[in-house]
Length: 331
Image (cartoon, rainbow, N blue to C red):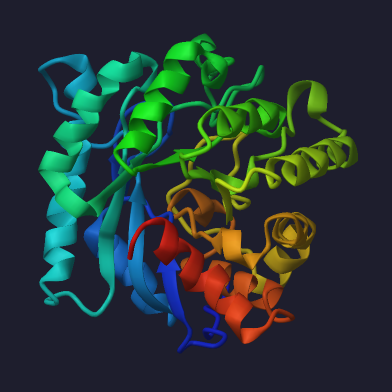
């Protein structure tokens, strides 16, 4: 087991804009996994970092077992809203977990998705700040199972664009996780709905398997060009993280052995390329826990980010660790 790292710059306030809660006990993963309120609190406490708030991003948890299919994701928002209420009581420490919620709604419903969005707002009020739905598509397997063919090209469809417009009309944001081969589609969506704040999750993960296996330099070059082009859209923000998860394998239940030095070395090129393109005013570090724990602990992950940010000014660091996320999610 890797020795726990002392937190670097431990007093720096952090808004973690991408922290899941889940209890997985079915599907392709080989073992049950639990990362709920208690586990998140323990990870933060053990890290020594000053996490003040977190944003929950949908991950298919606690959907309603019945009712109209388009409304079953309300169960996830209800679930997280309860955790957020517990955290907001102050009885579990100073961090406000689940303080903002990015839920799931099917934008392919087009204008009809407005009713679904309003139902989420009725459940969680101002905690509900946006939506993410499944858009990642690869010809290869992701997390051990094939991608749904319906996700291929989904962001380019007129109904999806119409749904994104409904999201913008309610002053909500759209989180998107996609592969680097889809970044052009995301740029087109940003152009089509300029009033919508779009947050690219996990840096737009470069493909690494199948036809891309053994071609990391080519993938990085294509990703870099696409990231710089996407950054020309002023309504797009980027989350700097998701680099620890193993998209080619199944999710793990334990912290990986990586040190912050190792992670910073491995992640530097992607992080610096994205910050140069978007600037710190439009970029934010994210833990993406628990998926990223297959690489390292929560503490080592944030230490790696602090090593990567060491050369930026104090104001730029504040944007990267707190300010951009607070602005996007109204914290």
